[in-house]
Image (tube, rainbow, N blue to C red; front, side, top):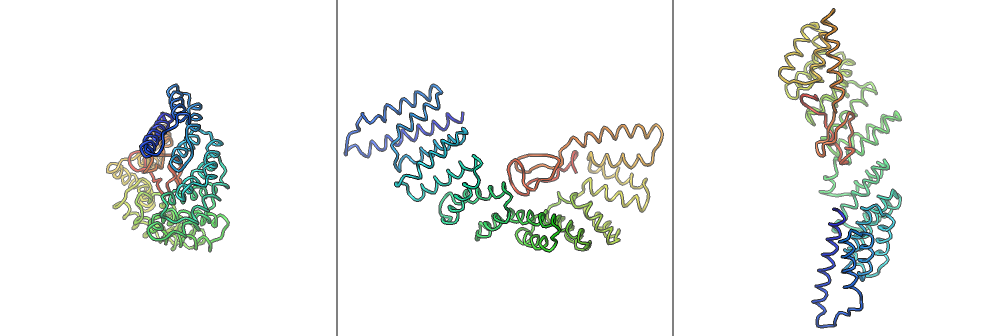
Amino acid sequence: MLDAALFGLILVSLGIGFLIGRQERRHQYTIDSSTGLDSEYFVGLNYLLNEQTDEAIESFIRALELNSDTVDTFMILGRLFRQRGELDRAIQTHQDLLARPSLTREQMLDVQLALARDYMKAGLFDRAEALLKDIVRLNGRRWRGWRESVNALLSIYEKEKEWEQAIALLATLKGGMSQEYANRRSHYLCEVAEKAIMHSDILSARKYLRQAVRASQKNVRVSLLLGQLELRAGNPGDAVRALEKIISQDLAFIPESVSLLEEGYSQLSSQRGLTTYLGRCLREAPSAAVIMASSSLIAQQQGEKEAGRFVAEQIIRRPSLKGLNALIDIHLQMTDGRARQNLVMLRGLTGRLEDSKPVYRCRLCGFDGKDLHWQCPRCHEWGSMNPIMGLEGE
């Protein structure tokens, strides 16, 4: 279906170009039938109708006399070669176009971008990067393909994990475009910060995370990383302040911060502070993680029985599989004999059911899985993966 659609577009462009050219030149000269345009055109059409796509492509190429009016058709052929996996032919087609002196500046840039796409699909990232860097550096935003070139270059940096170069590229953007890429820049800075944390470079990590905050105040990842960093550095107060910002950034990520907050408040010896914050979360964004952390506090203060009663009340208000498992775990500690055996069997079943469910889902393309990816593996959007909420999630 894809080949037929593209060939249909080629046929239409050839037909329109042929008719317009014939109209414009009617009073200048008579078309010489010996040029072979008509015959090659219909030979190609015959090949296409018989699904002989390779022969059809060769026939169309022979039929076209390359000039500024047929560049778009050759671009279509090059894209078709690329989509069919014939990367050598795609590259050759676009390189041949670049060698023609009659191309306009816009056409030259379009062909260079197409050639960079060929290199990327062929895995020749060094060649693609060099070509795209020249395109982006030397040509302003008025060219229609400039934004696509920026995105293509960024995608190479992402694949190669060259975060510093990606950050430097985005630093050259101004005005509205700078804001458009603010979230992506914030995540790039988080990537560099994580690398610094791995090497125990706390000062550099803080610097990058401060820049990430300035790039995007709504990036939850920054708050989580700051919480982890400050706990590691022995600054639980700073960790708690960073993590509690999440409630104003994205309520869905509160469950990701609960265990870190428990550790931070424990180091501060402030059970009351944790109780107050969890109470706010229960009112504004109840989740299984918040319910379980709250029940743990209740168990310490009032005993397992009260904790079980609290969890049961919360499950009635907001049913979830994780909450049910937490309730079973509480009752396992208060039960023995045959009843406990039955609960163990039930917990095994519900535990396997919970383990079989995805934990995160992309809000844009629907990709889901057990691990939190800050860049969706399917649609490659940054910050689009969220914890799943509801009966089978939080």
